[in-house]
Structures are given as C-alpha cells and as structure tokens.
Amino acid sequence: MTTPTSLAPLFSPLQLGPLTLKNRVGVSATTRNRSVPTSIPNAINVDYYRQRAAGAAGLIVTEGVLVEQQGTEWEHAPGIWSQNHVEGWRKVTEAVHAEGGLIFAQLWHLGRLSHPDASEQIKAGKPVYGPSAISARGGKFRLVEGEPGYVTPTAIEDPSTLLPIWKQAAINAKEAGFDGVEVHGANGYLIHQFLDSSSNQRTDQWGGSIQNRSRLGLEVLKTIVDVWGPDRVGIKLSPTGGYNDMGMPLEETLETFSYFITEADKLKLAYIVLARYGEAIDPVFDGKRRGTPHDVIGSYTPLIKHSLKFGNTGYTGEEAAQAVARGELDAVFFGMQWISNPDLAKRFELGKEVNMNVDYTSLYGTGDDLEVLKKGYTDYPVAA
Image 1: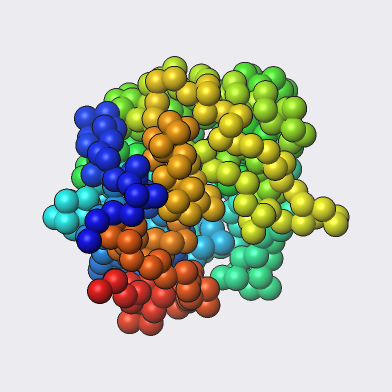
Image 2: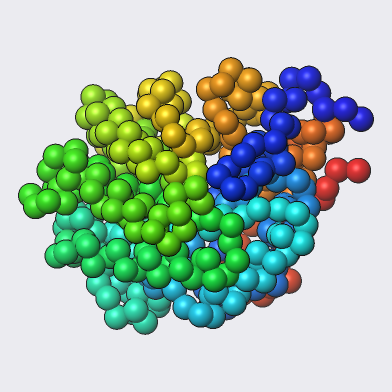
C-alpha cells in the first residue's frame, strides 16, 4: 500500500539539528493525568509513549512536565524536579528509543495557575506566584475541597530566581535520556503570563514594554540552550490567547509576538511551534470570547529565519501536508488524533482511516488505579 498523494509531503525526512526525523507528523503535548500515585512516570506512561513511537511518530513531545512542585488542576501531572522523576522518565525514553523514536520533554511552569490548598503546593512550601498579583478567571481544582478556581498570586519579587529551576529541569531531562526539550510558552502558563500585558503589569525590567515582558521567556531559552545547545531546544507559543484567561488587543498581540519570535529565532533553536486559534479552548467571559483570533501562521512564520517552523491545533492530515508542500511549515504536531490513534503516522502513510472517536470521559483519567487508568489511554486499537 502506498502513501496517498495528498499526504506524501508529510513523509519526507526532516533534519532537526543533529536529529533526523523519519517524517513530519509530530505528537503534540497533551495533558493525560496518569503519573500516579505521585508525579513520577509509571508503567502505563511508558507504554503510552512506546505505542506512539511504534506508530511511527516523527517526533514525540511529552505532556507538560512540571519543572517544580506545584498544585495543579491536573492531580497526577508528571514532574522533572527530582532524581526519582529522572529515573521514571528514563524508562519512557528507553522505550521510545527501542522503537526507533525521538522524544522531547515539554518543560512546564504553571505560574499563577496553581492553588495554595493543593497537596503538592503545600508540600512545596511556596506561595502561588506570577508576574503580578492578578488572578486568572476560571479554573476548577477538583482535587481541592469545594473545587475552587484560581487565586490571586503573589507577584514574584525577582523573576531571575526562576532561571536555576529551569536549568535544573533541563539538566534532569538530559540525564533522563530525552533527545531535546520544548519550553512551554503557550496556553497562559508562566512564560505566556509574562508576555501578556493583561497578566503582567510590572513596572520594573520584567514588565511594561514588549522587550521587558519578553525578557523572562528569552532568558529561560538562553538558560536551557546553555545546557542543551540551541539545536535541541524548541518553544511552543499560542499568540491568540484565550485559554487560561489570556489575550491582548490585536495590534499589541502582533507587536508582542513578532518581537518575541524574532528574538527567539536569533538563538537558532531547533524549532518554534505556533498554535493556531481554537474556539474549543477559548473561554467566554462577560458574554464574549477571551482570545484574539488571527492568522497565526501567516503573521509569524515569515519572521522565522533560523529555526524550523512547526504548526499545531486543528490540522487534518491533508491540510498539514499542503502547508508543508507550500513551504509554509516544516512539520505539524497533532494532539487529539494521536490520543485515539497510537499509530496515527502509519495510518496517514498507508491511507488508513483515522479514528476520530476520542473517549472524552476518560481523557484525563480519575483515581489512581493503573488498570482503570488504561481506559482511554493505552487501549485504543491500531489499524489492521
């Protein structure tokens, strides 16, 4: 069986720094909530990533991996701040490599999107902090009594004190055997919070101007590049905002992200992945959508000169192949399709039907029974 002509552009190899991707069909970071009973990867996490490597993914990016202990909305989100995490993730990377796959860790810091009464935040002994004392609207901490929403964070006094946390996470990811790392600069988390003027209203060198709001994200990238080299470091950005109460007026959005992307690209990163607008993750506040929809790919990819250009959010296989064929993108990350198709790249390559029936009731898992948590996680079938 031959690859459908419409999808053929996705199946030429791609050089990613020193790495050769077998194809241009990437696995996007998708939170799955299965690192139980702690935040350390377990046997079913290993199987989940192994399946997708066996399914011929060009590059796998893990779910968000916490760089420090925080009280998340996701009760069993994995971390990478300790040696136990390193050992757990090493089992994942070894399984992926045994299948001929490549895997990056997505390094994640929640910033203001934590809760002080969540058990992990209590164990950390730190307040919930962000760029400014401004709460995000929304949130639902199901693991905390009363299922509260987001709280007003403590404005961190000196953001440069965060850099050693990111550096240690990068060092740990290398020790765990990852092939590289992706900085989570999207979806309203810490890097995005500093970029956006609605969440960052500082008046020091870390806020105010676009250059100052970009400072933390760029310093984090430089810190991680010092550990990995630029050609094994990527960053994910979601300029349209929306999710987690983010978003600026259109002109300010374009100016902010154009500056940040231009400066990040000067580091000659492995790639910059741009998430397009998705209405499904754009909440409604006061009767209107929070985000700032615009043409993300058309607006920002022309600014990327030294890094590979990856797209994300809502792509079909055919649309992704067209974007690659036009030279608009070098590769595309898929999220939900990889959840219900552990062999998505093989299905694309062989012209097999894609299973679009995601079991949303088990998407994030519940409880800490590994057998129960396999449902909607590692039990999706591969194509005949």
